[in-house]
Image 1: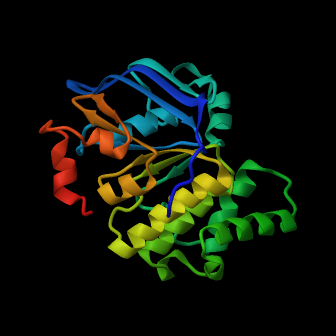
Image 2: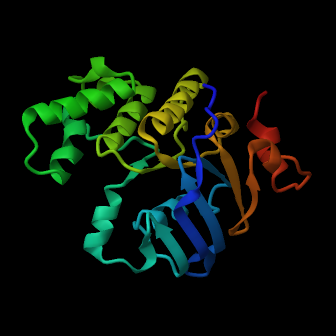
Image 3: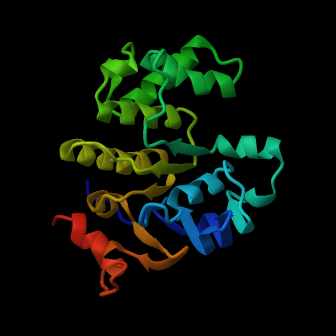
Length: 257
């Protein structure tokens, strides 16, 4: 899918990170990270395994505490936030887990209803049904509404996981390895869906991936996490226009033109 021009508002920063540090014992993961995410932008974060990419988005969503630094999300300082305020903030942050995180004992309908009725009390049945049908239509899986997760393919589970996140209409999407474990054709479909979500729901997204095709197809901007800091940021071509032997292997290993 060709991404439209002019959909990013560079005057509106929805996430601003400065000097972020995180260690686990003697293992220093994030060593003074600076990063901005702009309204309407898809930002791809690249980096080797264990370099702190997943740690970063867990800190953004308040699932992990930073050691130091500033993390401002939608105007709230996450590193110093009351629990009640954090819970409200999380309603605006959609987290697409690598394993889709569906409840195996629930139908697709019940999986989608669960976050909605838990966070919005007093909804009428018609409102719930409409919300479920709308997000299923958005991910192209209306026909699966009464199926169990075990009856779905890996790509379908990934789509339903995204639909369950979208039902709360978040302002920010955090995708953790969205194409991991999927066949090439399904990967392309998920990449298209990420772009469709950006356009339809006006989301701002951070996409963690090792998949260079995903990075190029979905990312408005790339940022490579190396040695605990973002060493290169820019468009796909700008990031990989280098002979840096820490950067080129990402491209040379798995990107196919």
